[in-house]
Length: 142
Image (cartoon, one colour):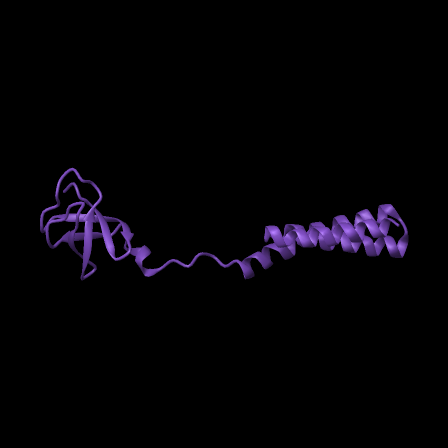
């Protein structure tokens, strides 16, 4: 009878994993299924709890990190991300409405981050953000 509770608990945990997607409930659910197997084989509550604990802890600490790494890869940064923080030179006047800067040898559409004053052509700027195909820049304090 106790094996049935372990079995139902394991199935419920594995089913609940579909809502979380974090693999924790899946690992604990598999541990509960292992506990059900131990209960069915040995009919000993202490043994089934021990099997559940060992399998769950083992899966959570060893299998889960590898599974998460494999199925949830790190965010891939684009080439645009490397432009943030780079210095550029204003080709035309740049204000909050727009303008152009030369950034890494290419002319980019740009707009000023600060609407306090326009950036004059030839002035050095720093890229603080890339918004679509527009570099958002801030005048350097040279």
